[in-house]
Image (cartoon, rainbow, N blue to C red; front, side, top):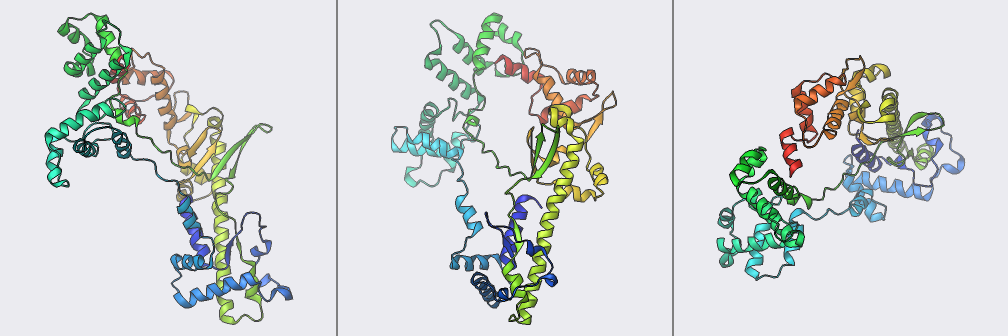
Length: 475
C-alpha cells in the first residue's frame, strides 16, 4: 500500500481491533506481544486486568452491544471523543495547513485598494472573475455583460465594464494584467516600463517596440526580420534595440502571481552514503508509520480464569488479527528495503554522479533477482518516495527502460532525456540547435536517437522548438 493508504488502514485496525495498540513515544515495545497465545503464562497478579485495560474492555463491550458487527470507524471516534481520548484524524484535520490565496483572491485584494466609485468597483470585480491564470480576459466585454444577471438595476453596462477595465489595467500588478490579448498586454508592459523612468530623452526604443507589437507580431514570431526592417525602413541596429526592449516583457504576466505549493513529500526509505566504507545503505524513514503491538492487557485478559469463554474467543480472534497485521506491516517494510537495496546495487553510478548515468532497470530483472512476482515489485514501488544524496525521487522513476549505446553500455531513457536537455542548455543562444542537429549530437556521443524521438523528449522537457527559442532569446 502507498503511505497514505496504509496510514488509513492502520487507523481503521486500531479502531476496530481492541487487541491492537500503538506504542506511544517513550513507551517501550512489549516483547511479550509477539508470542503465541498458547505460550503466554500470566502471573497470578495479571489475571485481573489493570484499571486502564478494564476501562478499554468495557468500552469495547459497549461498542459491541450497540453496534453488533457494524464496528464503524465513526462510532469508535464518537466513543473516543466522549471519553476524552485522542482522535488522530481530527487532530490531523485541525493541524492541516490552510490553502493559500487563490489567483482571484490575490487580484481582488489588489483591486480593493483602488479608489473608484462603487459601480466601477463592482464592474472590476466582475471582470476579475473572468481573468484567466495567464492574466488575460477569457471572454470579451460584450460576452461578460450579456451574462451578468445578479445585480438587478445596478447591472454593469458595457461602457462601465470598459471603464473598469482601463482602471484594472492601470492598477493591477504585474503590468500587463487584464489585457484582452497578447498584443495589448505587451503594450501595457511597455508603457509601464517607459513611465518608470527607464527611457532616456530621445529614446525611440519603446515607441518602436510598441509598433512591432501592434503591427509585426506574427513576423516576429516567425523571425522574418528582413521584412520588418524593409516595412519600417529601419536599420538592423534599430530593430535589435526594439526587440531587446520586448525581451523584458512577460507573455503571460498572470503566471508570476500563481504560487505553486510544493507537494508535501513523505519518503518511505532513506538512502545514505557511508564515507568510511564507501557504500550506500537503505533504511526505513523513522516516524513514518506508528509502532504497533498486541495489547498486554488483553493478552492477560484472554488467559484470566474469570474471563468467560465467549469473551476469550473474541479476544483471541482480535489477538490473532493484531499479530497478523503487525507481521504484514513488517513484511511490507522488509520487502521495500529488499527492492531499494537492489536499486542501490544497480544504480551505484547514478548515486555517485547523478545526471545522465541512470541505467535501465526493468522490474522483471529485479523480480527475477529477488525471486518475486513482477506484480509484487510493481506494487512495492508504486506511490513510494525515497531520499537519496541526489535528492528526493519517486521510487518508480529509478525503474526505467533504455537502450544500448554504440559502445555496448546500457543507458536509460530518463538519462537520454537528461542529455537532450544538457545539449540544448549548452547551445549557442543566438543559433539554437534544430532537432536534427540534436539527434546528430547524440549520435556523436554514441546514442542513436531518431529526430522524432528528440522532438518528443524536448516537448516533455518543456523546451520549445529552435525557431521559438531563437525568438525568445532576441526578445
